[in-house]
Length: 276
Image (cartoon, rainbow, N blue to C red; front, side):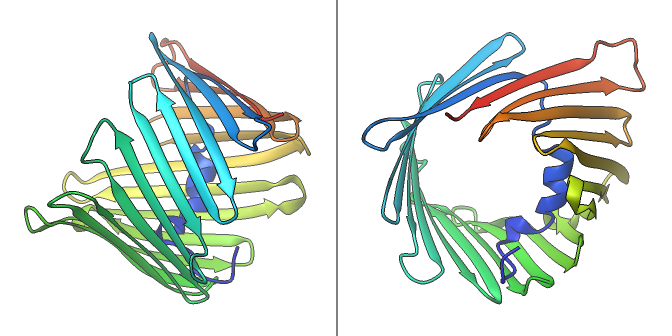
């Protein structure tokens, strides 16, 4: 963890990563290479059911400026330019997706030892303005995340969150959907030597009084192989095994089964990420 509280998106992130990151039921292949000019080229293909999706991304870093250019099979082109440390603690991001001329957006992020702020605005005539801010330190942080539609004059998002960190434990609480749902999460490192951790998430929606509980764990079998598992209150169980067969290259097998409908076929996902 850094010295400061981070950004609003960091609230509950450790638990989310443990419970959901790398779990998938698709087939994915990603290959990254580098050109002599220093451009990183990443080709990605995904098979979702009967659909095949793909993209090719180019990334160039020059001093504190990173330029990303991604071409997708849906005929869209995403261009992102990121400037790090334009001033101490400040990051600026500009993005645009062609051919959508209303997709332009600019974002500013500022990190301080006792605060983290992110604000973004669409580059349109009547943009949506987003603001999130966190105050605190690396032990306790509180923040808010709001969006305002300048065309309708309404707030489209109002969230608030709390993050508590002590040694190997992280507890988070967020109020979302303009107060209609509350989410509590817990992350605990059990054994740092084997990267063993447990996590849980409880979500309650006030409008329909529905509760969703998800619990999970992770453990490193050896320095290069990790297993993860989770199950939720709906009876959906997921598990994966991930192996780093060379530096920065991973092979992941994941599966999902509905424990309340064992007769249904299990979903299996494969992911291969190659970074020579």
